[in-house]
Amino acid sequence: MSEEIQDLMIVGGGINGAGIAADAAGRGLKVCLCEKNDLASATSSWSTKLIHGGLRYLEHYEFRLVREALAEREVLLQKAPHIIQPLKFVLPHRPHLRPAWLIRCGLFLYDNIGGPTCLPKSNYLKLDGKSPLINEINRGFDYYDCSVDDARLVVLNAMAAHQRGANILNYTECVSAKRDGDTWIAELKNSNGDHINIRAKALVNASGPWAQKFIEDQLNDYSPRRIRLIKGSHLIVNKLYDGDHAYILQNEDKRIVFVIPYHRNFSLIGTTDREFDGDPQDAKIDDFEIQYLLKVVNKHFKRQLSESDVLFNYSGVRPLCDDESDDPSAITRDYTLEVQDKDGKAPLLSVFGGKITNYRKLAEAALDKLKPYISNIGPGWTDLAPLPGGNMHPSNIENELIDNYPWIPVRLAKRYVTTYGSLCLDWLKHTRTLNDLGREVIPELHEAELRYLMRYEWAKTAEDILWRRTKLGLWRTTEEASLLQKIISEENTTTATV
Image (cartoon, rainbow, N blue to C red; front, side, top):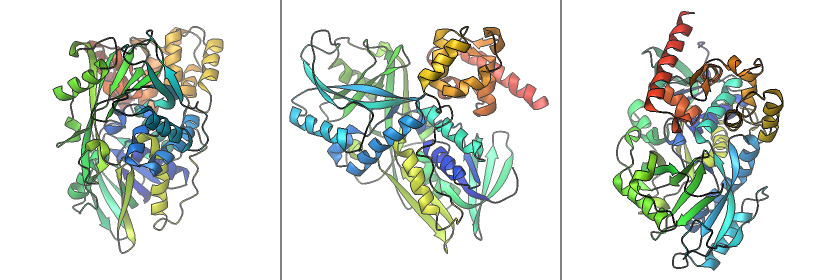
């Protein structure tokens, strides 16, 4: 990297860091982003995989947050149609929890508070014996939100930033940073143990669950906000019911649990809200959470689940601003941006809280906060610009694959479309047969895709590829993951010696 002064040094490669990097780079700023692990390796890849307004937030009077999130849902659906799709939700009515009139009012507000929408409006439903729900539940409501591949949303924003000149450094930790006159000097350390110093006009703390700790430990400063860490855990089971719709289930504690179709063969169940005290990297599901989620599902569905039905689980830690709420579910999901400077120079902008749906608006707000310090910030641009791969509708890409690459197996073609959008055409354009994709490293992963991910999407480990760049880990064995890691190491060694 050159010795020139960066406009922004961003610490944190989750959705907020990547979103700010993309926005800033597109406004003509010199940007460097570092992430101590992989992109989206923490909170941003362990979400409930939704782009939504947050229906339940209406009960906590979070009207501004819901309004912004619903408006953003429309923007993001146009920006990334390959990884964001409309999803119908069925809300079974349980009259002892919430009366029908209250749900109707909430859904009416949800339909309209965000402005114009391309998604269908909510409806009242009568449920019969063919429903997968227990017979006692005979009515409900439906409405629409969107599903998202959360980790890929992060990677695509990092790619958008890189395409506009940003330096993206994953597996690179910011070990310290200090003000030096009108600028910051950040000391970075990569996975090889090499140290790099970056000088920047502004430092952005987008380290998510580590935001408070980063200020206190790496900057030796005081944090203007206190973070509460809330653990959310999810279960993945074999597909619980037929159909491509999701369920939003009400529980006696007034919380809700989602059951969502997940990658054809599975159902995703979550989430919990538990206070967490420890290193966010060590967050794991506990027995209480497993039983809690299973109990909610079993109160609603005819098919009963037990712990043996759980194929996978994951836990993420949400960094929420401490608003002194007693109930973790009631803590605001809104974001707060704090700027600390020294004599009007060398600002530190810290991101506290936020939700994945609002990341683009958060990035715009962050750049607005930095305008007094950086004179050459251009106008906003991200609302109409597609993310990489999102410049074509998925159906058009699928038709192109059918017409021009009929030799690609249907299942593989569908995965290419919903994972990469038009980006898959980059490595397919010189291929004429399946053999041209190279050897099948592990089932469904050919050399051409592997090399693309390593070269253009910063993938460095088998976990990066199996769980964040793709979701092939859902189908692969431990032995196949080990084989993939061996091949990646060989590929890295070969590249390093060329």
